[in-house]
Image (cartoon, rainbow, N blue to C red):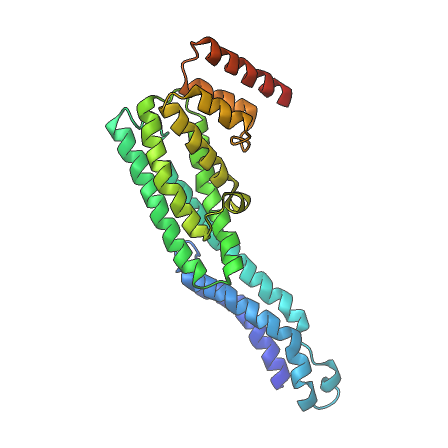
Length: 274
């Protein structure tokens, strides 16, 4: 009877725990992560619990007692809670980036600059809070992988907005460069790494924004040779040639012979990609 009731309790936990947590979008992230940890712990215990109690059970249960079949259900509950939490928090971070508008004319128009600055400051603040919650609850390696995925979503949205710009003035370069110079180190802090290759592998959009920041700096200085050096050295390697060409057209007035020659070089590289 005790053996049967123990199995019933685990079944009840699988059914009741997610319902008790409620809508993950409104629940405490800390509570959701703790439930995920409980599911992992109980699932692990189920793999060995039968063997531990078998000696105390009468025949024929001593040879048949097992909880192994319940482990997968527990792990599935934990994974479902974690997936729901990731989805809810990703949506929140994307909404924060969207509040910055299209990031057009951020150095030319006060309202656009204020919206972009406010959005990226809120994004950095929200990511710090997530790092404190996830890093303090999940195993470090697990937390880092999920934080990287959460970080990559809003950074990807930001990058998409910047790549869509058709004109980026010198003032825009300065403002965007300053915003990225403040944001990117905080992203490294969230991932607990200052290694560009490591952070780029976990969050590809982070590496691309680093390279874009270098391009913006060169453009702000109107330093065409520096842009050419970035391209030839592979320092813009996270971008397709067509993307570099689009950015080049937005950043530079292609008037000099050298500028036109570089534009033709990028166009040839973009055509070769297709």
